[in-house]
Image 1 (cartoon, rainbow, N blue to C red):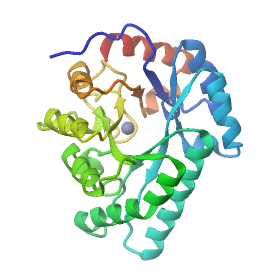
Image 2 (cartoon, helix red, strand yellow; image 1 turned 45 degrees about the vertical axis):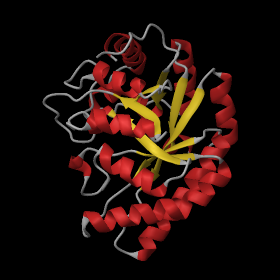
Image 3 (tube, rainbow, N blue to C red; image 1 turned 90 degrees about the vertical axis):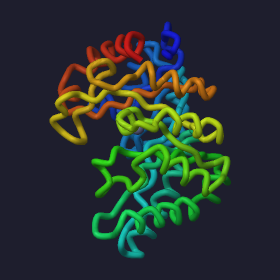
Image 4 (tube, rainbow, N blue to C red; image 1 turned 180 degrees about the horizontal axis):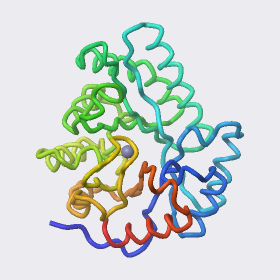
Length: 277
Ligand code: ZN
């Protein structure tokens, strides 16, 4: 099974971190000129800005503000650390509200000095603590499972099954799952996990890039779509079989691409999106 070809850019969203050398104003102008229709905003790009006005600027450029990245990082072996995380997530909800997006991506966190089970309990507790704020602001929270190579410090939620279970345990229309191919492509149970996510109305976001072989940096060597070994069209077909018709978000952390001319990189992104996703 494969997905129907993407024939235009109407569902293309780019994460600001993908073109990290650009500030948010440049990114808005360049994405818009290239025909991109969505933007996911990383919080660092909002530093020193009037967030409400920045949201207006993005929309004036014809961009839907798909989500804010990122909340989460709840686990900490000390109470003070967990409290600081909850406070920071409340700020993220406020920022999302001001920006005018209804979704925050959650990188859930982990603390290597405690067990993964303890970290998972603290993730649950953290999301429950901020859920009333999210509901009041009309902002949904997307749990993004991360590749197990990040289970030490970045996320104790590493498979779509774990993300589904957590979302279903919380059982709120304001909590769902973000499917990122970079983190999940290897999982033999991915198709059934995506299906279950859709059946529970929990599929909130779809992130794409590619897995380069070899990968020379665990964090910042993601590939452009088509450059690696992820079966992108197959995974998109599974996502769309659930009824998902939302944005397809290009999220690439790459020391290599960040050193390139970003205008040329953006051209490569739109071409790779149409050809390889
Ligand atoms: Zn992602």
